Image (cartoon, rainbow, N blue to C red):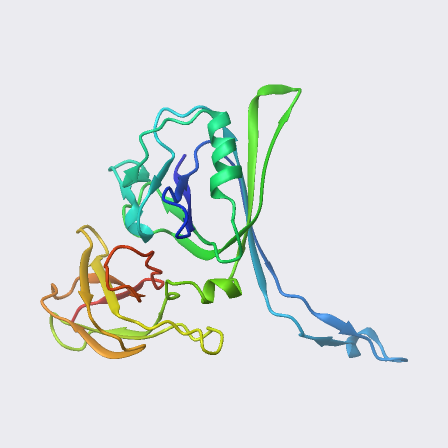
Length: 281
């Protein structure tokens, strides 16, 4: 197919949280930037005042064909580490052993994968099968619609569609897992070392900011190499000058960071920052 789409549900109530799509049908990404016109009386159209009163909205709509698959399509995992490249295609790192029929997939989507409440959030990834690095596109948001249909012209083929909206729901700010931080900068001014500066998510409701207990940093070479993970006991929401030494000079690296508020490492979903790249001095 050339690329794979993977949807990940971020919910404490769902153990099987990842779904990989096969038999891709269509994919569309739409950015809406509404403007309200205020035409002036007795003036030409050039004098029309365009007022920006609403923010931008991005939606992602995609469809695929449901069929009985020969490999697992659902699994569990943590962030992008839940997915792996076998040298040819992207797949699930920890797949569920069940091989789902098309009817099993319908039940899974309708009963287990749709949002149980506004506290459930989702991550959307597009992976290029020819590239074993990070996803070529990723966004966080929620699913607004899951639909399946079948027609008399093709009575054995089910069409499935998901409508995805980019953003954060308010209740997700109050969940146990801290939202993903943002890199301020990633630089390398000293040979073999990278300096990372990041800032914690700023959109929590007043009084709902989580207490940070752990910070996890992941990094790897842009071309080849496996992910390395550093876990610290940092509780700083704004980290300035975090240093990673002993990197290979002149190579380019990818960096990500995430926070947790759980002392029991691994019991919560880590919300990773968008990756940043830097060439090492």
